[in-house]
Amino acid sequence: MSLSTGALDDLADFSIEVPSWAYGNSGTRFKVFTTPGVPRDPYEKLADAAQVHRFTGLAPRVSLHLPWDEVADPAKLGAYAQDLGLRIGAVNSNLFQDDDYRLGSLAHPDARVRDKAVAHHLHCLDVMRATGSTDLKIWLPDGTNYPGQDSLRARQDRLADSLRRVYAAMDDTQRLLLEYKFFEPSFYSMDVPDWGTALLHCLDLGERAQVVLDTGHHAPGTNIEFIVMQLLRRGRLGAFDLNSRFYADDDLIVGAADPFQLFRILVEIVAVRAHRPDSGVNFMLDQCHNIEEKIPGQIRSVLNVEQALAKALLVDADALAEARQRGDVLGANAVLMDAYDTDVRATLADRREARGLPRDPIAAFAASGYAAEVAAGRTGGTQAGWGA
Ligand code: PSV
Ligand code: MN
Ligand code: MN
Image (cartoon, rainbow, N blue to C red; front, side, top):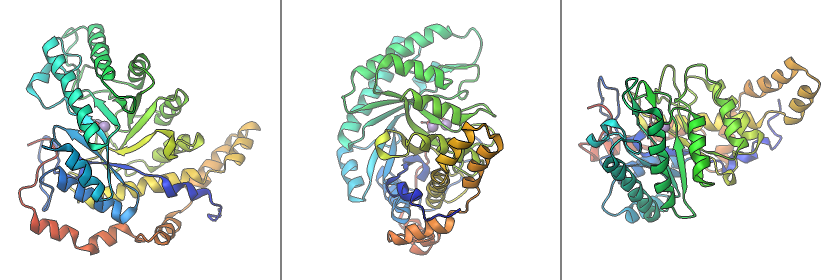
């Protein structure tokens, strides 16, 4: 396949949002390993994120998580991001580390706790106003562990009411992005376990409520690209949390476990040009780097997404349509596989070089000395929030 077709031109303004928590120490409930030079505050997380953008040109936005990224002056944090050539992306409302949330947050049986969770979102909206963020991202740990523990239906009603209160407080320029997850930390029922539930809540709320699809949040074998297509059909795919899973919510580097699945997802995206910046689909990462180096881990991640998108852009749409029309099952499949099997690495390196970026961003970062510099200068870095 020739790569000189201009099919890859759309890569020029494609971007990926990185999570602030990818730069902190993280781990499992068994152990959190520390990394020398890990950021001590949100400012240092942004400085590390800026390295990913510097070497790839792909990652100009950073998601925050509150209260992990709480600062005295959010406007100053937003301005600092700008100085680094970045922007604050989605603000995630953390509802899973407060003792009050033992039985849930926005769906909690006690109105006092629900009020507290709603108030936290109003605070997040203020931080968004101060930092220039437009996306409020809600992932609920809410659910139950035992049949009978609470009324499944009452929990939905309480959740709908709480979400309405948050939505009503939003500006016209702000979006509410609702993420689903099929299990964990609740093991019998999650209150937003699937895309159908998330979509129903979003449809009730209004136009500016959209669904977040985290690629690690489905049962094994789920056809994720079908969900992508269906949410796109209704104009309700707001964002991705991209990562890889082998078993559950593994939060590993995107494209590591199943690059073909990532390609198939992006084929559905490209089919309706949702990779374009004006589509409203925010391509975010939600990953943790438990044992690998964090900045190179993020660089690898954004490059994996770019590579999968490049292959999706190479799909010959006309040939595919013709094969489908004639009922040529193998022919249609071959069109997809031709694109997937194309080695785009040299082409992408050429494109980087032409834009003044390194051909090999991971090698360039290693050669830059940044890791040694921060290891020497930062002591007592924070953990992203998991384990202990
Ligand atoms: C939950 O598993 C989740 O995917 C949500 O997006 C959280 O905000 C995120 O992980 C960070 O831990
Ligand atoms: Mn997520
Ligand atoms: Mn997750």
